[in-house]
Each structure stands twice: as C-alpha cells, then as structure tokens.
Length: 412
Image (cartoon, rainbow, N blue to C red; front, side):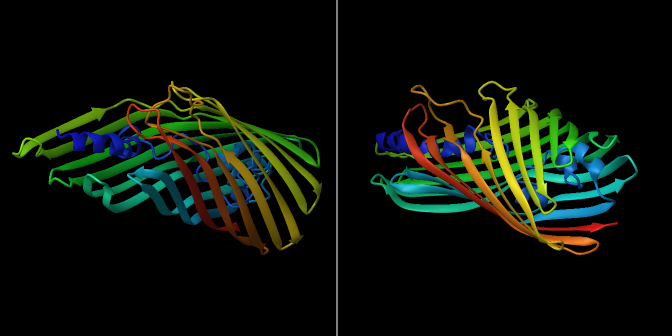
C-alpha cells in the first residue's frame, strides 16, 4: 500500500485499535464504581456497608436489611447518566471525543420485615453504557481528505435475585444475597478513510456478547454501641455461560502504481471464554453523633483474578443531616481507581491509565409512608492513553460523567 496510507495508519490506527479492537468486550472494565446504586447510598458516595437498613442493602450489605423498620417498596433511576471521554490531538490535530448517554432505572427492591429476620428481592443495573457516534473529520492530515467513523453500541449488566438476613440479639446480624447476573453487549462500528490521491479504506465490524452467571454476596453487621455500627460484605461473580461472535470486513484501494488495485478481507470469530471477576471485600463504619446526623466511611478492596489486572482499594465517605423530621440532605465522595498496573517505559498501546474521583449530593422529602429523593453524582479524572499500535507515544485524556437521580420509596 502506498506510503501515505501506511503513515496514516500509523497515526490513526490507535483510534481504531484502542477503542474498538483491543478492548472490544468491555465498556469500562478497568473501573468498578462507574454507577452508584440506590437513593441514600448513591447520594452519600456509595458509602453504605455499615447502614444498609433498607432494600438497597441487598446490594451493599444484606445483613443490614435485618434492621429495616418495616416492609417497603423502593425504586430509583438515573434520570440521566452521561459520560464524556476526550483523547487530545489524536486524529491528526483533532481531538477524539467519545460520549455515552443512558436513561436507566437502575434499582428496584421489595423488602419484607419479620421479628428477627427480613427478606428482600431486588433488581440492579450496576453498569450501563449506550454510545451512538457519527464523526466526520475534513483534512485531519495533509495526506488525508476525509475520515469518517460511526459507532453504535450498548453494554448493560443486570443483577436480579433474593436476599435474606437474621438478627442475633440487638447488635449482630448476618445476611446473604444470591444474584443472577446477565450482561448484554452489542456494537457496530464503521469507518471510511479517503486519501488525497483518491485511494480509500473502509472497515466494518459487528460484535455481540452474552454473559450469564451468579453473584453471591454475604454480609455481617455489628453495633458495639448505639452510636456506632460496623459492617463487612464479600462477593464475587462467576460466569456459567459466555457467548461472543464478531464479524469484520476491510476494503482498500492503492493508486501508488498508477493503476487501482483492490484489497478485501473478511473474517468471523467466536469465543466461549469466560471472564474471571475480582474478589470484592467491603468494610464500613457508620457513626451517629446525634439522632439527626450521620457520618459513614467505606473501604472497597478488589483482588484481581485475571492476569494484567492489579489489586486496588477504593474509598468512599458520606454524611446525612436531617434538617427536620421530613427533610434530609446528604453529601458524599468516592474514588474509582483503575485496576490496570502502573505503566512503565515498556507500556504500549492499547492502554489507558486514568483514576477518577467523584462527589454526590441528594435531598429527600419524607411523609408518613413514603419518600422522594433527588440527587446528582459527578465524576472527573485525567490520565494518559497509549494509542498508537506498537508505540510508547501517549496522548493526554480526560473523562467526566454526570448522573441525575430520582428515587421513590413507600412503606407497605
């Protein structure tokens, strides 16, 4: 192929490889806390292991539902979950911008309370990425007349299952959740590149993935005295089925010899390889200095089970304050560190290294039998992306997201 096309491929293949080829099956599997769940929990930065006294506890720590006040029905949804990633000066001198936007009802739970034990059934969406992108770059390089790419993808994970918890006296409880885990992924990607000499490249790719598995979670809570509660939970996902199919075709012309030559390749790939999920251990402390004020802190440790992943610790904390018996406000913060090992001088594409920080806020209005919550979560981070295939050259990158939350719950 003509030298200009080889040069273009060197500068542009990163875009194709990192975003769509090298990590084809994961929207963001390098981070574990991309979406917060629940009303109180989400607006306190996801710091909920030592509280969990409502149906959301089925997800954070099932032991906490033993202390629920009574029967309840609750549901929450991210009215808007929007993410934006920018790779600077990636397509020639142009920035490559990727955006994901989704409207997701990400939690629903029903809790039944008895004297010393509780049962719950919950539905959770911990990950949801929906991306539709059509970009056109005119003359991104002196040798390139036009570059066009189109991407349409959906990647959503669902958890569904029962929970149970039992109290042992006034200060200790144990709980268990068993989730069925289902993931649906699809992506269609197409690009067209036209050189100034009239030659071109066309690439099309279609990928589909389905995963089925289980995620057991066990938890414990202990209150050594009335003002302090500590909690611990452990979980790990195990796939029982994984089915992937990918189809790709590539077409190009070469005018370097003065005559037009055509190259066409097509291939199909299938795989039943199952991912290995990390072991997740969570610890939490909740302190109640007054009946109207709460402070809580969580530590989330993830022990990697796959090669090329690092063990990490995430931190979160939050506070809740009751202005009066019917109005409460909450604030929270959290980290969302990457599970990729630290890069070094030998790191090559495709590779992204970015740590993310987040903050949340919420307001809840209570009545005698129901509550309404409104809140928002914002995250931001900056890092480096190794984009050029086989190269140690990097590009700066940033990522930010915004989630608007609406939640309602009712006593039964």
